[in-house]
Length: 231
Image 1 (cartoon, rainbow, N blue to C red):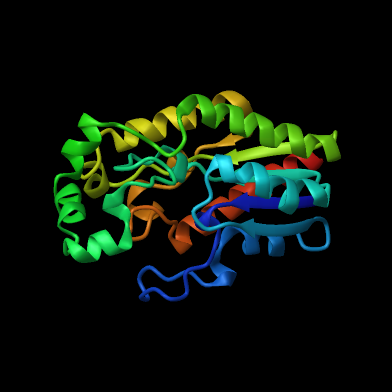
Image 2: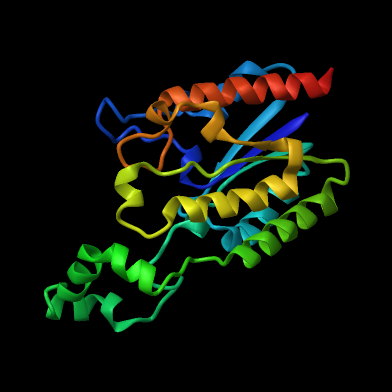
């Protein structure tokens, strides 16, 4: 069976961090899963930095669908759901490099200082909830074109710690809403990592990416689930 893990930066190693937060390639769940099922299944890890569901339509075709997999594990959504100060690909002058230099970045400093207020007053995400659903359905449809008997798993978006929750309005509520779409679309193949790993062991200090422990837990769970389905 050909298995593809298709993720954003949550699937990649982070060897450049301090020892407490570091994950090397052999620590990430895609590599661990590959080792666990070696000789029985083929596993490819495909990750794209800052991937959201809109960009995943393009990459999903070229990196996933064209390989004609038997099982795809989706792991992205935080870039869709995170509260934002600006819309995706915003042309706002505030983001312009020369303007930021000219103004000594005072506008961005003010926006970041009062981020909670502005994200509450002008709530926005890169990808709306309705578009998130449509994008996932489009990706599934495209991959299924090349692999009619394919199985899909979806790993949930991890809830953020209190520090990030207090900086951006309804951060975890957004995550719960987007996870609700994944749960609805994938049913029993929705894997809620927030239930699988205790909050204090789930994320590194940036509040977004997985600890080495969480990678191990997820790899073990995926291996057991895959092997049960192959029996």
